[in-house]
Structures are given as C-alpha cells and as structure tokens.
Image (cartoon, rainbow, N blue to C red):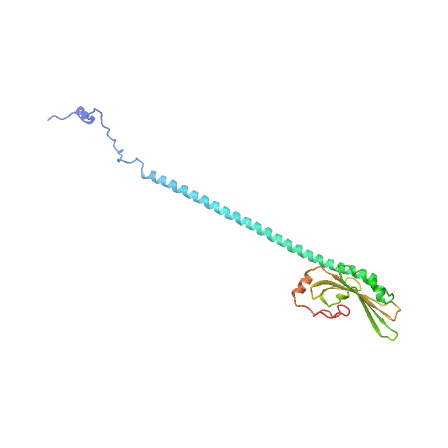
Length: 258
C-alpha cells in the first residue's frame, strides 16, 4: 500500500478548494464564543464601577455636612445678635427708668421752690395773701396734682389755730407714701407716693416754713406739693407687693389710705 508523501498531505489539508486550512498555534487555542479576555479584566471593570459609586456617595455626604454646618453657623449668628439686641433693650429700659427718677426729683424741686415764692410770707403769717393768688400759679398746671399751704397761729390766750389752702380741694384724698425718699434740698423732704388708690404716681415734697424771728403769735407752717411723676422701678415694685400702710399725715386733713 502506498504511503502519501508530504505533497499529498498538503493537498489533503488544503481541501477541495485548494486553500490550506488554518492550524492554530500551540498554546493559543481559544474556546468558541469567548472574547479572549481573562477573569482579571472583568474584575477590573467591576472594581472601577464600584469605586466611582463610592466617590459619588462621598461627595453627597460632604454636601449634606456642609449644609448642616452652614445652618448651624447661621443659627449661632442669629441667636448672638438676638441676645445682643435683647441686652441693649434691657439696658435702654434701665437707662430710661433711671432718667425718669432724676426727672421726678427735678420737677418736684422746681415746683416746691415756685410754691415757696408764692406763699412763704403767707405761711409765716406776716402777709394775708388772697387765696386766689396762692392758687393761681398751679391751678392749670398739668404737672402738679395738688398744692397745700398751711400756717399756724396762736391767739393772745395761747390757743393754736391752723389754716390750710389747697389749690384743688377735690384732691384732698389720702396719700400712700413709699420708702423712696430724697433729702438733698435743704429744709425739703421729698418722697415717692400714690394717690387715688395707688393709680396716680406722685412725688410729695414738703417744705417747712419757720416762724419769723420775734413773732410769738405766728408759728410758721408748711408747703406740700404733689407733682405728677413718671413711672419707674420704684412705682412698679410698689404695685407688685402688698400695699403698705401710708403716712396718716400725708396731707393736712386727709385720711390715711387703706
């Protein structure tokens, strides 16, 4: 039997068309239907997608954290300015009330001095000033609640007699004195007080008028001015506590407040 030679073998491999069939090289055979990429390439692709997702998630967290931090900063700044504004308001109210007290004493001093100029000699008993003239300077003064002039005399038998003239007779009610006083003006005692059932705040200023030297019958007298006061802490605290027992001698002939 004849054995095919090399030429015959090549012809057989070429097939009917005469073309030589491709013979895969050793070690490079590829399985049908595979791309030729190994497992490492697929794992690398999956790893890239996972890393991108983590970076995206981390970016969102940073944005949220920055937003929360921004809100906290705004809140801190807001409350800082709010508290600062409240502190300024409290200080402003305190200054206003302190100024109100100064204004109250100042007005009371001015009015008692004005009343002294009108009625000093009448209170001493050395001049019979008409009552209308005593009342005239204050009858239309809205800053004055009332003015009371008082003088005392003795007759030849030694009997004492007292006379009072009020600018507003209808306002001779009771007066409730407070503990806030001022004795800065010589011979004048000033104090905070209430009239009309603790509804009207006033400063009561009382000036003592001495008798004239060498006059045994005229004993001198006093001038009481009730000037209308601005509300301040003294009046506020007085209204918050239980009413105190007022001075029974708050005004000549006036009953004590109950």
